Image (cartoon, rainbow, N blue to C red; front, top):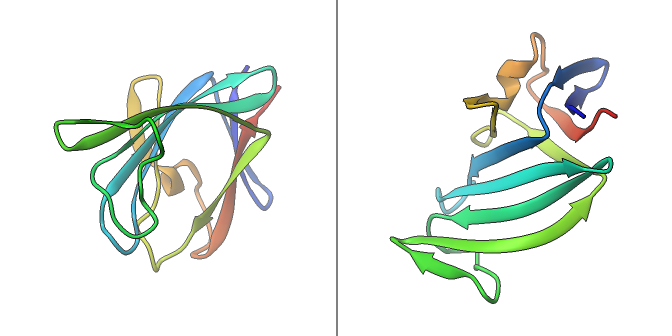
Length: 122
């Protein structure tokens, strides 16, 4: 199985079944991280970390605070993630196979405003 990143006619295939997605909250400027895996064609959220709290960033029930970071487990399955790419907010970072880079860097010609879809390729 592989992870596919798509935007319009652009498609990138990453040979990995696990990845971490992170971003900075647009208002609170607090980092959010999510660990995902691919399982039977779905994306499954395993764990998330929020490096603080604020507007729209309240940790869910059962979250635990460790060294100022909220950790929680979630077993949420989705067929795909649709992420907004825009010059008005900080971009997403995608980590897989031990390497992290801005999500936009996976594409050669991503428009300034676009939707990037993450899904299983298989």
